[in-house]
Image (cartoon, rainbow, N blue to C red):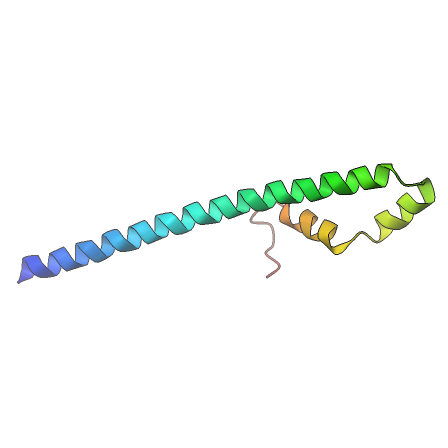
Length: 84
């Protein structure tokens, strides 16, 4: 009886450990994907600014699109204020 309980508890512990490891791996993968996507958005934004006149460039820098702002937030160092 005691060995059956120990076997069930250890099986549950293994399943929880695997779930925790998968969650960590998916979180890391998603964070890396978001970082790459944010860098691409900012590179496209920078290329767009380079083609604009000086006045248009200043106006666009003062009010960037939402996608650019989201990319800047996505690139912030983790652990420095979560805005959710």
